[in-house]
Amino acid sequence: MANGGSIATRVVASPLGELVVAASEGGLRAVRFPPTDDVSAAGTASGNAARWLDHAERELHEYFHGRLKRFAVPLDMEGTEFQRRVWHELCRIEFGDAISYAELAKRVGSENGFRAVGGANGANKLAIIVPCHRVVSSDGTLGGYGGELWRKRWLLEHERRVAGLPPLDLFEMKMGETATGAAETAR
Image: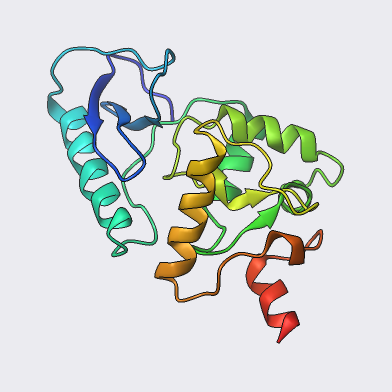
């Protein structure tokens, strides 16, 4: 839930380059790839904001080392009701899996709203933590990603490797199937 007050930021190193991590007293607000103009620097973190930045940095470190599959840091997201519904559903996609934009639209009750869910993905300020990278096009392409497509591919491959799954074959995906379901169908 959105919480007023100042936003504290920190730069966190990752295999994908630096991440700008932002938090409020209410929870984590953003994880973005620089350059980013929607997360402003705001002095030294204190109180809960400092705790949330520390928590996020630890969890991101564990994620990149293959020891964490689900984030627990409290979130302080701002968005429309529809965006929040999409972001909640993104967090339900299993680690190492991927679904199509059309499948995501169906899951949030907007069967023909694949463009709208794409827009909600694009508005997600919590890269990696709210895993919009797990949504791909049903036509065999990666689709979009605000952190550049090479990072989306890296994240998908990292998760599949950690989960002990074969590399993602986007061309095998069919609308409505998850990547795991498509792999099991091929067996």
